[in-house]
Structure formats: C-alpha cells, structure tokens
Length: 411
Image 1 (cartoon, rainbow, N blue to C red):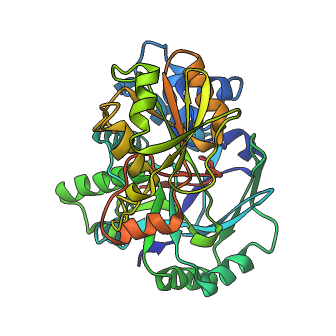
Image 2: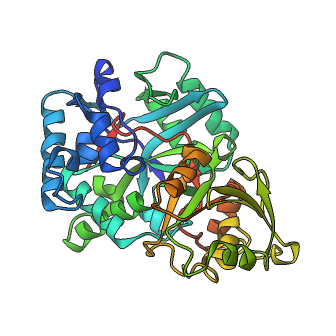
Image 3: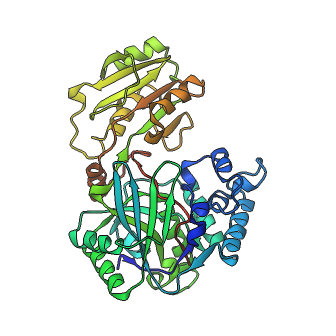
C-alpha cells in the first residue's frame, strides 16, 4: 500500500515547543543559529548541525553529519524523544487565521514512488540529494516530512476529522502564529481505515520535499544493492510524509532576484522589455493579482509588466506557467540565464518574505533587479505531474510550513 503506519519517535508533550523547529531549508545558517541559541533541545541542532561547529566548517563537511548523529542519538537516549510502542498513523493539524489544514502522516512506499503513484513535478539537484542522503544515513532516520497532496476524498476527510476530536498529543504555537497539533492514531480499526482510505484517494503528488524523497529512495536502493530484504517490507523501504487534501493547500508566489543586467543599462533593459511586455511605472510595490502579470523592482522603482497577449497563449502545461514565461521572455534572452538551477546570478525568494524581501535584496546592492510573480496554481502543478513533465525550479512556495521534530521515522 502506498502509505502505512510506522513507529514514530515524538518529543514529550512538555518538550514539544522546545524541540519543534522550521524545516532546514527555510533558514540560512545564521538564522538557524539565532533561533536555536539558548535552546539545547531545538531540532535545528540535528537538521542544521553546522550551527554547533565553527563557521569555517562547511555545511556538507563530514563533521556536520557526525554531529547531527550524535545529537539525535542523545535526544533518543535522554528521553527528549520517545518511540511509540506500535505502528501508528498521525494526524497533523495546522491552524491560523484563514488557514485550516488536516493531513495524514504515514510511511510512504519507495516502490510506489518509483512507480509514479507518488508524482513529482521538479528536477532535483544532485548536491542537495546527497546532503539529505548523508544526513539520513548518519541518523538512521527520516526527520523532515515530505509534503504530499491528494485529491479530495470524502471518506478520508471524515476519518481524519474523527481522529482529531479529542485533545492533541502535541500542541505547539510556532513563531509565525501557526498552531501545529499532532494526534496519535493507534487503534487497529482506525489505522486500517486510514490506510484503505488513502489508498482509495488515488495518486499522491509531491508538493514540497523532492530532495528528501529522492534521498530516501537513494537510502533504500543502497541497501537493496547490498543484498538486504525487499525494500517495501523493510523500514528503509518507506519514508515519512504528510498528505493534505488539495482544497486545503495554499501556494504563495516564488519570486526571482538577479545579480546584474547582463550588460544592459537600466534604460536599455526597459526598452528591451517593451518588446514583449506592456510596462507601467508603479508608485508602490507590485504584487501581481493575475496570471501573465509581473512586478519588477529596478533602480529604486517598481514597474508592472504585462505580457503581450499574443505571447501568453501556450497549450503545454509547463510552457504556460508564469515562471516559464518569465524565463522565456526575460531571464534567458535578456539576462542570459539559461539554467536557473545552477546559475549563481539568480536567487529565489519565497512569497512569505513579501515584496519587502525583494526590495531589500536590491537596495543592499547584492542584486540589481527583482521580479514578483503570481502564484502557481495547484491545478497547474498536478497537471504538469500528470503529464509526466517537470516545472522550472522554485515554481511553488507552500505555506504554512510543516515543523521538524514533531514526529520522526527511524530505519
């Protein structure tokens, strides 16, 4: 089956607020160090163990993975984390003004992932997959849940609602005001019902966590190559994931900043843009409210860019994405960025940082131009995955983010 229960490790309820931390990839080293300062139980000491080593030790240094393994072992040994006695499902709830999400936490089959029953929409970077693989091997655990989406399924939603009627085992208010709760489901009838319902919900879609799921697959395949048992029957044949119904998901914009104008003057760049866009200066920051419209911050001024209608007609689901249109009409021909995954001149800014985050990168002098985009729709993501295609890198930013450290899966 695509998702099964597992014996999770969880913090003691009284320690959950200390342990729980943002995902490893939404904080840089300095931000993680500040957040974990004075809190020896923060899971950031595991997921970003470089914060406990000298600044000249690179994040992919062998000492970082060794330190992460030592800290994780200490958390388990000292009772900061305790393992459930029987395989369980977990119900994960996130609540905030305008947000109410309820998802199922379970162990997803690597075999189902390889058979495309867990559908992907992004290419992965080898260095990032290697990083997460090395961390998983050092810990003997998958610690950051992969975020999945399922198509709405009434029976599954009903079961999840029943499971969260009582008080949660863990209840944490994150710094951003999002309440995270975890209910433990161990009763055999409910476990069986949830397993059957998620199976009936059909194919699942990776929303966030392509590198983590690819790393879990690498761990599994390395053990199979070494002659270990059938992966779907072994703990390393599955990886931890949280699956939410599609109608509850919220995607924010994922914006771009570029280091230089590729030899253009400001006026020359504006003139080149007019070949493909209608330009309008704006007295305030531009946060697009419709597709094919972009904001641009350049030389201290915001502009609204609307792609000419004749250029916006695309039948291919990937080519029709705003991130693709920006690449085709701006990043590639005007700024010389043909491989955004590897080009150091471009960076990506999640929508949670707002237009102020874009302005700050340009005003600081680090970057010369910033682009704000209309968010990619979830239906677009699923259409791309169903077509067996991949999106450009950094096409989606899901909010709110899951917390690390509320439940973990060892193998």
